[in-house]
Length: 491
Image (cartoon, rainbow, N blue to C red; front, top):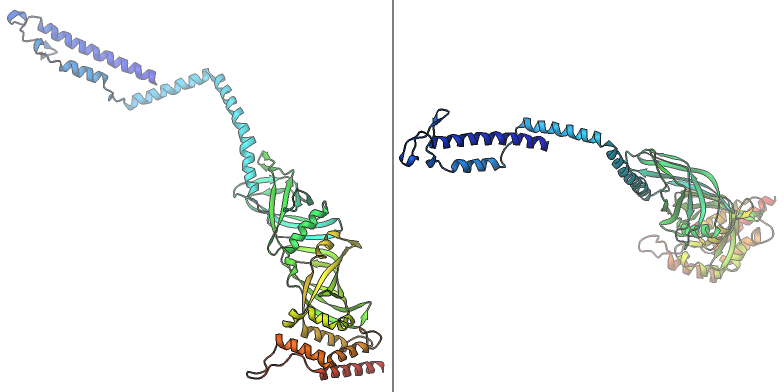
């Protein structure tokens, strides 16, 4: 294009110079020709193309100056036709040049791609995939931990994976290692296998269902479960993926998956409650209580532990035991059947220390009993890590005094078989023990005074309040009724 412009400009300049030279020659010739004047220099000029030319000596230098300015002026405009012609010529030249030098252009393109593509595949793509992986929360929406052996757990988990809308990706099947995030070193206690996933933008749910996995580190699983059991809010669970590959079309990347997911803790089953309690008289196979235990589970995980034996204590005094068979604690308030034994003879024989340990709960009208696991058995085998955790964290159960007394008397009145027999937990001796305790005015007065200080019921405004406990006459009537019932059954 530039060459064409120079050629056209050169032609215009030659034409311009020729015309200027001709005009100048004509003027000079007119000045030196046939005109008259003194000294031969005066003349009237001659015509050039029909025009009268002025004398040479009167010619101004303005024509020359105008010629110089116009020749070098940068304000010369090219017409559209000339620009279009120059563009066509430039494209033609470029095509010819590339056709002639195509080998060099191909070599340059190959070198450029050899530099760019490794940057895309080695740096850019893995960085994008890693960013997507780092943004994952992997929420635990639901799941189950079923201890089926001392060293095996059946695992189920429901979670989700999120990628930007409009993006499609696939994953291979890979392994997630679960570990205690608070541990000083990485030591997974469980692994789960994640199936291949098709991620079509947005949130994709996935499930791990009934995978039986070995416990690979007993200390690590014990440490994590202890934190999970104690946590009032969220408990951290470390998750690390191995051999995970994410495909974006034909492009593949192996990101590093190491996340901390949050699971709602159990808060030591705060709020556990005996909702139903039946006393059995006489005891059956060493069992004198049966009922329902409500266990609150705030986590999204269902927990199965096999059979749990709980030791019952009041203060430092052991007063009996409970057994929960095939325990499964689902999310929410789960009701579990129980059976056990309360040593009433021991309670009555040590009533002073018992009441002393209950001084604060009695003020609320409650009896507080601690239940501590002393064995966790699955298929006849002890689960050590659960025994170590639950054995050092007693569950506190509150019983209403009124409810407890009602259940006790109801058991005495509706007991199967004879209520007479040997031992304080089986027959008349137990009734006599109750009668003697509440017939003792000194002891009864102490209990009544303690009760009156902490819990009173106002009968009417302006009237004196009275104790919730009745006097010994009521207990004598209870004793008489029980003895009459026993006599009727003998007949």
